[in-house]
Image (cartoon, rainbow, N blue to C red; front, side):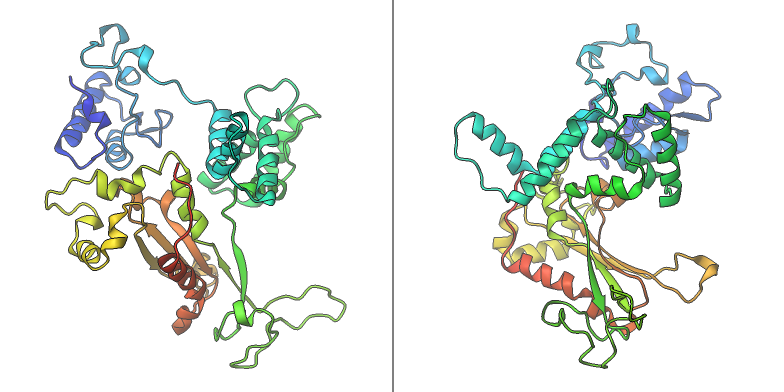
Length: 401
């Protein structure tokens, strides 16, 4: 059985879809009566068990692990695997060590820092880098090289925190729940372990990886943001409403009436080019898309093509980013508070292939409005619009991995 379809990046191709059907048939034949099997998609990585129908869906959406060409976890006998139809076991890439993955993340986040270190060895002129940024890099590097406890070789401090925080997000653990289990793990380990005691401390370690957010105060009546030219004001110039709540005179900190959270877009777009996992995919729409008059991606649509004709200089470089924007309000509290509405604003990078651009990992939340903005959503969009205008007019210098 020819399994070259596993390497096909186009998951809508007949070859790929036929290959999935062959795999499902193979799994049913070698696991008679089984209702669940290991899912070999890139997300489940043969560690999670799914129904056979869901496995087929996952393989279309996420793709199969490219090195899984001998289906030994689904009943294939290794000694009977033909060398002409399957890759030798020697050539299958081993599972990447977690510590190595964390080091790769650091190199992706700070490409100039790692470039400087390599250049110093070669006596070349180093790339200029901000001292504060380099200090963050050194802190992360220290935590990445520090053992979780003396003698621990499988986990560094940073690897342990990244793994735990990944589990927190994946399984939607509350901060209180996370703090409880973190405390339990800390007591289980030797007393000289370096595991942080709670979520707040873990978050401080990860701050160096960037992608944080800004708090911008807003008028209580949604008239304006206390932003840029209005940043120093204490009252709204439109309705004269106070910026801060009335509190005790003994209180030293002021509490704003309303806060909007803004997540800057530029560093998130830059990260797509700093990572080896996405830098190539950002050119997919130009270099790997199959142009056969079948609508699979926004790049196949007439609007995209018309935009290319209108702005040929922009279209000339496939690395220039095409974005989609969407928002909607929802009630996170259900029936507990029927009047509340939260409005997240998302941006989608359409450069990515169709099996990535609409996945939640690549959806970028740029604005979080914690109350219904009603007709004033344009007020809350101002920081994003300003940033998009700057990107269109001036662009931003980015390291392409």
